[in-house]
Each structure stands twice: as C-alpha cells, then as structure tokens.
Image 1: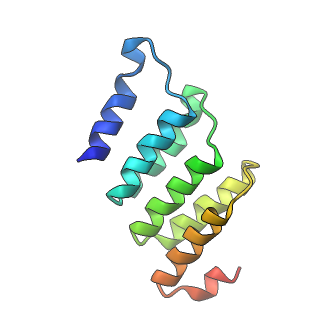
Image 2: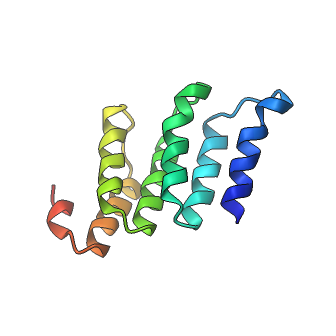
Image 3: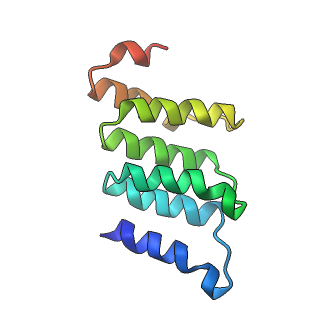
Length: 113
C-alpha cells in the first residue's frame, strides 16, 4: 500500500544524503493513518529521536488518528498523554481524535479524564 511506499522512501533517504525531518516523518505517519497501520506509525514516532527529528503537534495528531482508526483507544490516549509529557501543546484535533477513539470503543468514561 501507500504507507509501505512512504516507509520505504523514509528509510532510503539517508542513502541519498537526505535527512528525514519532522515533515518527512509526519507524512509517513499520516500515510500509515490512512490504512490504520498503527504499529508502523507508532514505531516511526518512537524512532524520530534517532534521526534528531522533533515531533510536532501535526505528527502527534497523525499518530493519535491512526490509533483512532485502528480502534486502539488506549494507544490513542497514551499517545495524547506522551504528547503533553514531551511539552507539545495538544490542539482541538488532538483532543477530538482521542475522544473519538474512546467513543468508538464505548470507553466514554475514559474520554472524561
């Protein structure tokens, strides 16, 4: 799928003397979100520090959205929490995706926290 192409491009960047940055990672995570490939998306998010790329609110929103689409509400909440730990200010999109993930799973109590 498209997400695999995005991952391949990201991993081949160093061989072309290109460094993956926040925008590159965000685009790859967004590609994973379109196919609900949550494991790949969260792996990318975790690996960003290895490339000295700093996740932005857009990066975290894409990661929360992929968890939402995959029905992984616990991971959506954990990613939202990690976002705040990393001093990235959540946006309306961040909260909306996390709330939607909880609601879709019938975990509305968690959405109140």
